[in-house]
Length: 129
Image (cartoon, rainbow, N blue to C red; front, side):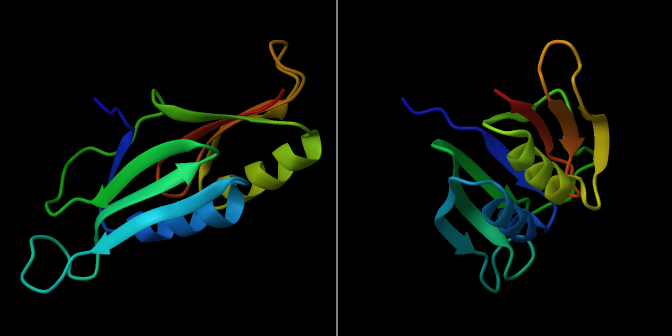
């Protein structure tokens, strides 16, 4: 048995991949297949992709049909970084065009923590460990 997080996008899966790969250290694209002409969904969209985020394998795709729902902050990637400087770089990139749910600060439970929803709706909790 294998269990992986699965993210469903509405046509911007590849752009999210680009954001993650350029922002989160330790990330790498494992594989990506595009939709071809005649296939359900937007031609050229991501039919299936796997990205590794600091050792965590994540599966994602562009949904071939539209949905009335999107991502929720109830599910998020929790990223421990080693310094405030690393935190600030990642936070700034993920918050660009997104929504800051908790601003970077010492919130008492962590020396430096923030929670951000990136421009594609995926939530990230960033923590200096």
